[in-house]
Image 1 (tube, one colour):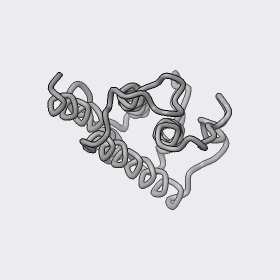
Image 2 (spheres, rainbow, N blue to C red; image 1 turned 45 degrees about the vertical axis):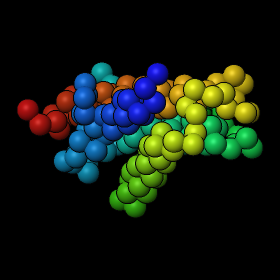
Image 3 (cartoon, one colour; image 1 turned 180 degrees about the vertical axis):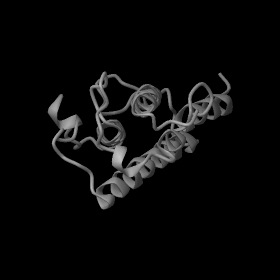
Image 4 (cartoon, helix red, strand yellow; image 1 turned 60 degrees about the horizontal axis):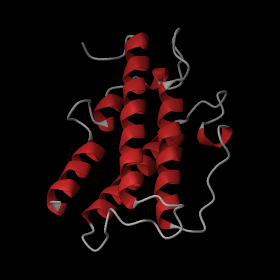
Length: 158
């Protein structure tokens, strides 16, 4: 196996932009008043999708790196309160934390001392590679949901 190629491909997945827009692009230009809007036909708002992405990605990352990490209770712990409307500060903090954790995942992938195919010592048979793929897959799915919500709101560039 070509370790360099594997790591390069994983970074492409985490960055997005190959088969779908990167998360930053999916959020760019979103009107602030649409952050918490749920259009007809959508289960969640952009805010709910982004906060869910942040929580899930944080859980995947922390579970991978910290044997003492306690995951949130499913499903309520993985989604914000639907009545909560994000303030400007809350929206900015969620974005900052999401991208900080994404950068930490990328650093983990770049760390050549880490065998990505090794089992996580406390990981119930899971590997580092599996966790990276899980985070990338989850982010890709919910990035698509963000775009769908924006399209339903008429807040997506033509």
